[in-house]
Length: 216
Figure 1 (cartoon, rainbow, N blue to C red):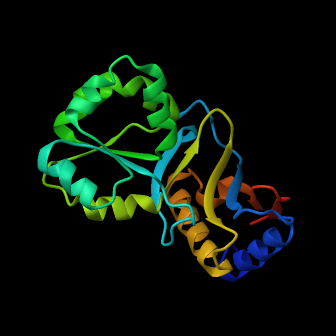
Figure 2 (figure 1 turned 45 degrees about the vertical axis):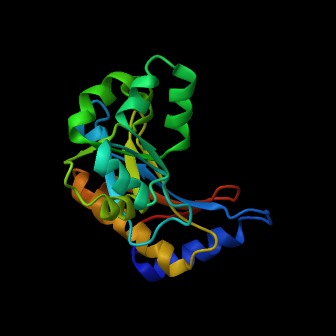
Figure 3 (figure 1 turned 90 degrees about the vertical axis):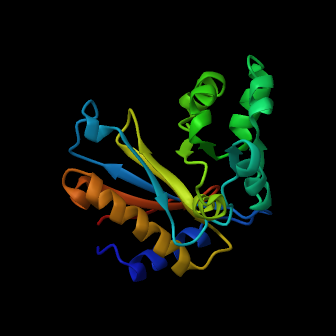
């Protein structure tokens, strides 16, 4: 079956119909069953940040770690959480508070000069979660970066030959979700050894619904 927008829109429609009546806006996930890949080699450890054409209906919460004017710009650009140097230093060793910050924010952006301090204090909680900060120079356009990363997802494969990534929510149109899926597939086509020939099955499912399978 061809993996194009029309086919995917039909599959998304089916997945939505199997979602059941729930009182919340369910996430829609793309799940890929990967074959013929050596999980012990570098190709078996995929981790790509992908900017989607449409946010998933649940935009990423963004924490910016910065100082002075850069921190002020981040606040003005509606970052969800801004950590200044003094705030960061005061968190040193406070595991409970650090875990809370790590769990409530999806993307971390840090002013590059602060990265050594960030690594020391936040690294132990962000590293295992795959959330290490993106370093940016102090003159970066933080507003544009925040807007971009609201729409990013992390496509990762570790330990098992399966990739699962959120690509939308029930309230989005089928076409928007299909465009998001195609964006993820194009990235993987360039990353997997045999491109999409390494994909045995594609599943689309809502958080509480049954998966709908496509064999590409």
